[in-house]
Image (cartoon, rainbow, N blue to C red; front, side, top):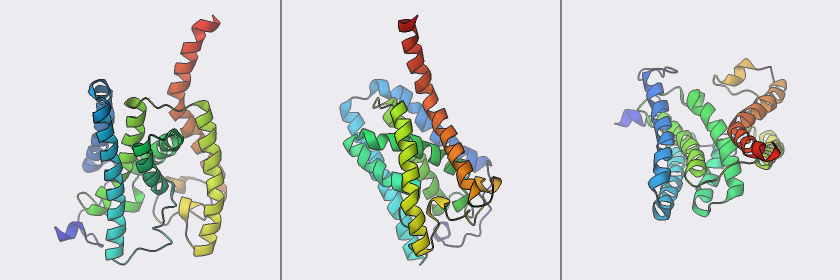
Length: 245
């Protein structure tokens, strides 16, 4: 059991889109699709219970990473502050689940869904480990929960993004990058990866060198936001078309 919490992992390597990776992705997807059924049978009591369960689970999972890192002496302000977007959204989503705050939902839907999806498809920062090691389980649980929370609030609770949501999230995300950039300069960190590409393999390796890849990320982010908003845009256009015919 101890080897699954060890800092140095000597088991079989993680295989991108291997059997265990695909199994984890299928489990996350099945949870998302299950909401299509449960939205019809859950009442307000069940919904409140699910929201609290999600909120507690995502906070406990995040705290477990800090405890594990502190235990092994690798916790530091350069990597462990909640400044990466998914880390920020983990804490915000727990508050959003309890309060049903729509403004936070907008960010959880666009940034949480979009960012967490990339993290489960290419879990580069935890790829030095393999299932069932704690480190990679924690990564998939954290990002899998962010995806499920975004889907749950949309499918079950009836929240949905709007065109204004699209604009607000895109603009405020860019504004958020500014103070993070200066924090990186002050403490020698690389939050949001705006100070350079990470030391581990990521999709950023396919982009231009720093700082030009940041501009490319802007375009990619805009495209991902648009894809996430597209189903609602199509629905709105379909509802308006009979009125204008």
